[in-house]
Image 1: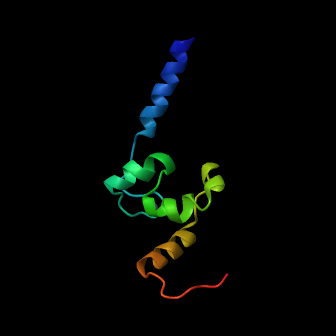
Image 2 (image 1 turned 30 degrees about the vertical axis):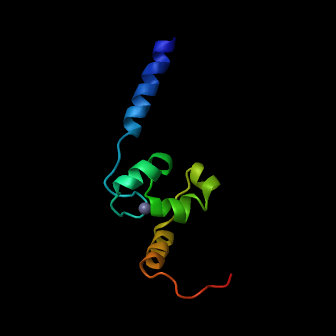
Length: 88
Ligand SMILES: [Zn+2]
């Protein structure tokens, strides 16, 4: 009985270990620090963790991922740090 459970766990953890070269969200190459810090937990790079995962934690955990449009917008903002404040 326990043998069966062990086998399933083994297969799962092995496939989970496959780490892509790029962040699946923004497509930017993953740094070693990303893999250590955020990929393991969130499946994305650190920037995406801050921009999407942590701000949408509940949705993120239920499988939600940002659309390409949302990612593009954040990438643009990332490139030019805002010198102004947008009022909400
Ligand atoms: Zn990313």
